[in-house]
Image (cartoon, rainbow, N blue to C red):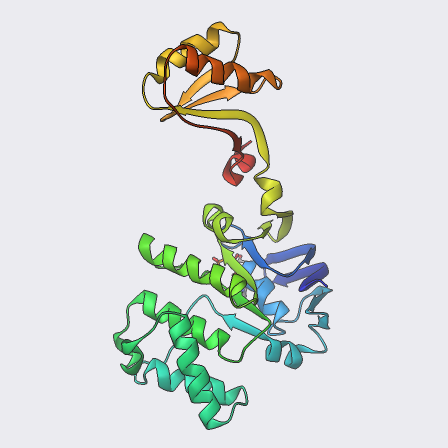
Amino acid sequence: MSIIATRGLSMRFPGVLALDQLTVDVEPGVVGLVGANGAGKSTLIKILLGLLEPTSGQAQVLGLDTARESMKIRELVGYMPEHDCLPPDVSATEFIVHVARISGLPATAARERAADTLRHVGLYEERYRPIGGYSTGMRQRVKLAQALVHDPKLVFLDEPTNGLDPAGRDEMLALVRRIGGQFGISVLVTSHLLGELERVADHLVIIDGGRLLRSQAVSAFTQASGVLAVEVEEEMDRLGEHLARTGLHVRPDGRLLLVDIAGETTYDVVRDSVADLGLALVRMENRRHRIEEVFST
Ligand SMILES: Nc1ncnc2c1ncn2[C@@H]1O[C@H](COP(=O)(O)OP(=O)(O)OP(=O)(O)O)[C@@H](O)[C@H]1O
């Protein structure tokens, strides 16, 4: 079953068409929603949650209609908004227990569930301190915890890496992956950085100006290219010249030699050349496309 299905979804704000006839179906897993700033990502999430009414078209989340069943959708879905408005004077524990109570858990269960959730998102001793003194990374974790505390089937994470330094981004992306893998919760995660979502998503939906550009499994973007990447310990140039003399197209790329595959014999030619020249082969592999390359062509 699709976790998200939209049909001809449009959203017009005064002077801006934020979504333009968007039709897309998404299967369970970690789904990356990619688009430049203003592409319509947050607008789509708000419609899916029933917070905004679309100008036209329909949408379903977990098989539920966003126009008629938004309360049921909110029971089953967690939402980490892009911007935060966390209360500065209470601790993460107090805040998350409060959110758990709002979602209907009794007091003891809410405390247990909040403690588990805060541990899962990587907040430990600091969870007893007031949120006002937290770093951006810690605030993002509190926002993530409030999206997860009611045990949703699906979470919408709107730009979870926003404002984080490279190490903080890596940690947040690892958490996103763990939510999808270890906890078995489907995730719709947005970013304006394609390379970021390429690392954690199973499927990518790419929008531009409110329109669907592509919706495709990450593996389909990164399928094998017709290029062999070869790395030798030393004398890469000598190997390159040797291969060029056999008629192969060769070019250096950092520590790698990229060889256009010209039939099945290419592997043998490279292997034999390395042996003939007495070089040490580090690796030889069929290069995979990087998604960014697919979009730059
Ligand atoms: N409530 C609103 N009123 C008017 N225009 C809006 C409103 N919300 C969004 N927009 C406009 O709709 C377009 C899409 O905005 P949206 O926030 O969905 O983009 P986004 O892809 O999430 O980008 P960002 O990451 O910058 O938030 C933008 O041009 C934005 O200015």
